[in-house]
View (tube, rainbow, N blue to C red):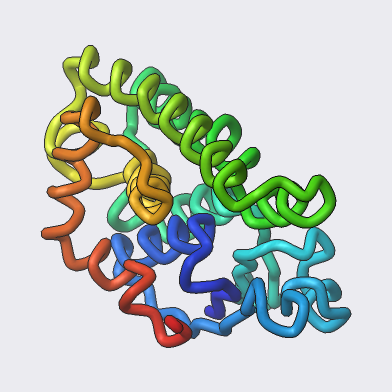
Length: 218
């Protein structure tokens, strides 16, 4: 199994957490998103993933080599094909709940703050670094504040997003917190989120997946 990704990519980070929680062995292939104009845009990588994004996962299924893209699709695939240490809960309502939390991050927060959007702001639109960072903080803090409300109000929230065992939603939340901290977002009004973050800092799967612990870290 090969994971094509970048140490700082939150989408790659999500998949690393999922793989680690399941105890799966995988080889990492570094795709640097900045060097050489962005290695994700090279013809060789585009042949693997036409989106020109990370991550991409290569696996063997029924004797056939398969390539998967998009972090959520990859994590759901892993949960179906490698069901031991399930990331999604068994109940339909709980599954909908954790998917909703994950989608709030993957579809509402991350898309307006990922690298290609930030590069467009600073490059094409010529906004200053200060303005770009303010954009990032606004959308990240706004989205995480909503998540804080949902998690704090839900009786199913425990040490992690659903109970006391890490799972699907945590794979998305923890990388987003890492990004928020990198851009100096104000997380002081989010005690539930930060409590979950602290619990992840004590878990081997999250520690191993952290950007600082990747082979391609700069």
